[in-house]
Length: 521
View 1 (cartoon, rainbow, N blue to C red):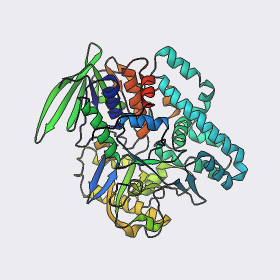
View 2 (tube, rainbow, N blue to C red):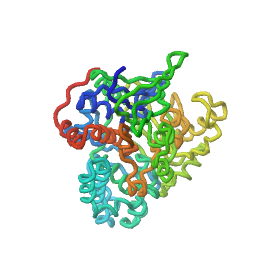
View 3 (cartoon, rainbow, N blue to C red):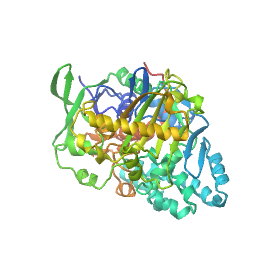
């Protein structure tokens, strides 16, 4: 196949870049995925008629008329419908207090002031800081990927905000909020970016909080609807998305990427071939790109050693025999905490012992109008080292001890929900648990979490990582922007824009402002 660009990995960032290059640059793009399903973290699976999305839990800023919604509609060719979550879309549970979050920034601030009247000024300052720091974070990362004079000017515009943005979330909250309960409540969504307040940059915290100030949305049909729509755009433009295609090496000649060496599996047979293209885009993650796919010394490899990973996690996928609305759930998310500390080490030890004390509860079936059976997911942090004894074993072939550990963890997560909502355990019909090894098997993240690169102050300070790697080679996805569907999408926007030239990113934004055609399905 004669192609103009190769995308390594089919995560949302890679698919976004492929879609935009297809539509706006007229390129034929080949997407190569090593697994049997496209989508990366944005893929789905089924058991016994139950359906779960792996990395998709909810998406912010999908309100009609918003810029992120416009870009999403462009990327998907207008082929995805979005369903709004309930107005009260998040609930934070603490022993001292339960806070129900509305899909309105002003109402949320007023609600918090009602709970903490003595913190009135601090709360209003917090929301103002979230808005300006979130804007700084977006401008800062974009500036890394613009021509030097333009990028330097954009970065300079946010110089006054930089100091606050590069504090840790915990340090910012300690400096501005007197009440320890309020500090804990404001940090509740740290699981959305995978790094606890003591390590995360306030910039990423602000970006995520701002992302959800208008509430949450869910794609009708789940993550498969998103992947199918984008693949339809790519194939309509003469491109292709292949599964069972493992890229073993990015080929470099005379300092320029010229293609890939890929092992393709066909039934019981496999073959290795070289595919060449003038542009290679890696959505395999920064660590895999620099430490495995490039067979040459790269300065980024040394830089990566200074970037920690986000926390590993386990997920209990639950099939429910009855409608959870009978217990009072309406499709909102529940963040359950055993104390105010946000300590993933202690919480992870409790989860391993089957006595989970903190976790995130989500109901995909209540968010998706197309769902046919009721499901839930419960996520909790765990120490990745607890699973090292099974490293190197194959998925679904890890033995009885591993299965027993997963069962203990899963039952503990069900019990956690039961303590908050008695009667829940009796509704569970099916339990399946994924571990950090599952994440490594499917996403290539040995760290075992949704965030392979933690967004720490140090990472932002050292500007890690822009999309340009070598002539002919670019990074994309969450490692170039931020965790999550929209974070990965904006990584894809920056990559495609960079490939299209100095005005590529503005061109994408301008094109998104016009209605997108419906995608072929």
